[in-house]
Amino acid sequence: MKKALVLSLFVMLGVGVACSAQLQGEWDTWLKLDITPTFGLNSFYSFLDIQYLVGGWTLEAATVIDEDGVSQLWFEAYGSLGAFSMWSLAAFDPTPATPAFATFENGAEVSIAGVDIYALFAIQPVGAGWGSGFALGGIGTAGDIRIGAEITWNLGSNLWGIFLYGLNGWVTDWTYSFCSAVGGTDLWQPIWYYGSLGVIQSGCEVIFSYITAVAQFPICCADVYVMARFSCTGFDCLGFLVKNVDIGLDWLKIYQLGFTYTLTDKNAGIFFQVVTGDIVCFKPYFTVQFDEATAAIQGITLNALTLSCTVGGCEFYWGHIFNHYMNKVSGSYWESGPCGMTQPGFANFYFMPTGLLLSRYADCVWSVVVDETTYYPNEMFGIQCDEDSCCGGLFSFGVNNFFHTTDSAATGIFGWMGTYAQLTVGIGSNISLVGALNLSAANGVEWILMGVNVAW
Image (cartoon, rainbow, N blue to C red):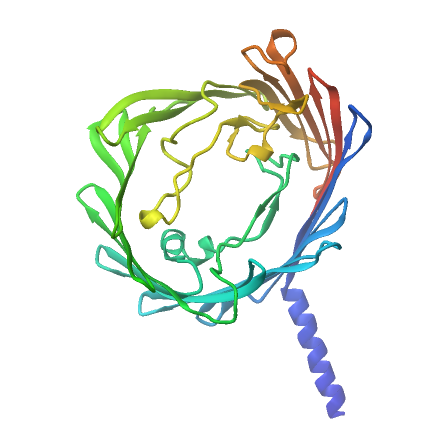
């Protein structure tokens, strides 16, 4: 009788947990077929992500299958346990030829007397072997001053990222993305986002690596950051960063001004931002050429200009790139920090296949290959329409045309380089069918794509 009672209690507990939990996920798969010069398989991707939400925790398992089989597999868990918030990731490379362990990363945080104390731990392959490292840090506030400190063993300094974005914002969630553009999935080229923690060297010894301290405080109308870092050899660097400096010009501001000192040299960086005001449909991309040696602004370059407007549920857009190769990004998308923690963004401008976004990822842009040479457009225009489908869900289609305004071996009439078209039909509230094709002036219909997306 007692055994039956205990078993009944366990069954009731299991049913209660199952009822209070939530299962959600996504299955995204697509097949791309080459049409010219020969018909055949270009690529196949299938991404399955399942999340189980229970008791304030998210338990996640995800895998990616390509034409060669299972190519990625990872497990993730994050949530709270009492006063602690925690995150853990275990990832593997299960490719049949060279299966391998990829990374094991962990983070935990607790708030004590207004101070956020965190710990990090990671095991990762390094070179021909593997290594492990961990870190302990804390961030607190005293009046207008915010202060953080961290000590790491065989792990790179992570304080700057955690100081800016918090622990959960810095330890990057592993995600499988098809170069997502504004307005939806791109279906062009998959991009991985890896965890942030980095083990320095292989071996079983866990050695001291860095002590890092950061302080943030306001001075007049600007925010000032100060960082000091020490390694096993002593003093490493001292950095100062001032953000959002108003120099009295309505059209020009200093986005960031930074100085980093080491025992042997001094580095300075200044990044300007051109203030364009409230521009409704035109968006300019400027670069300010600044000579740090003479403190002279040598010129302002309009790198690109885009136009977007919506009429009757359809978005019309146009864009032109004047300067493909920028030297310095004004108002960089990337956060740069003192002591070289991160670098400002140096990138080329390209057009994404399914939208107006100027991408920083060279593998996710529209291009055409002619005689083993890759050509990129410098102008495009397109249309994207979204409506409710007859079967539930969303019906959308888009057509983008790409051009090159100078002579090119990849262009046709009026400088036309090619066209990308995509159609998405929702056949239910959670199921969508996708079709796309790519056409170029040089090669004709290059490939077609068919896919399905299921979310629950």
